[in-house]
Image (cartoon, rainbow, N blue to C red; front, top):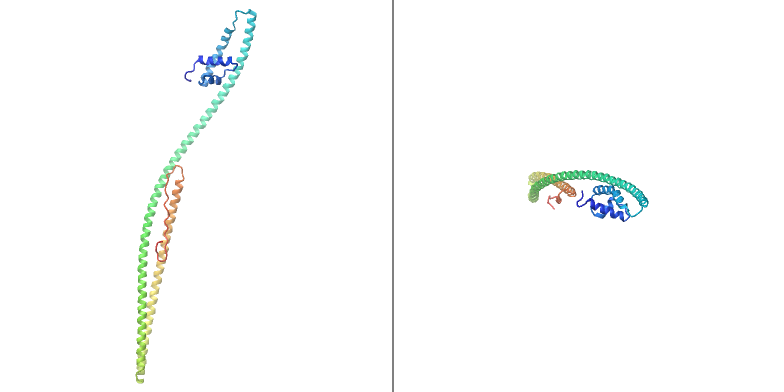
Length: 302
């Protein structure tokens, strides 16, 4: 029940509307008073209408008129009042039906709003669940990122060790090349000394020709044996060099493969972080930049 609404106020407003030639409906009375609930105003209007006939009867008592005229006017007024009351009852029934329809509509809307609120609460619960899952996923991604950084550091250490091995093998190869060059120079000197000795022997007397030829043959055999040894040593050096080169290439391929795995892992982590950041309830996560590792034939990082 609205505050400040009395029966007298409703009666006064209804009388004023009736005196102005208007039908005192619930909405008009409420508009006149500026307040009041529909149920309260309806009940008070019913009370006003129930006392309207009695008040009209008192107002129609005209002692100064002849009885026949007064009776005729009273009968006419009662007919008019009855007709007006029937109209008011019909309008009141219509208004009550409209009010009932409004109440039904409001009840349906309230039901829909309750269902909508329940759905919203369910959506909030689901969003909170997704947020918790996203936070756990972010924590897992952070752990994976730390693991990937540790793996990257380990790969860098392995690359450095492989680079040290390659440098050492390159030094050994250079040493072998220097030894090969030194041996070749020594063989050339030996050949020159042998040729000079042969020329000196040929200058000797013809009687020493056979002996000189025999010595020359022996020297030639020594030279051939030295050349064979030289070729064998060169071949062994080449085999070792090829093996070192294959090992170096294999190490480079392994470093490149591991670097590719690091890039793929970091790209996947960045994509997951972006997907989580785009969700309205998920926390913003900054995706790490992919670290590219490029190896040349010497294994250096660029």
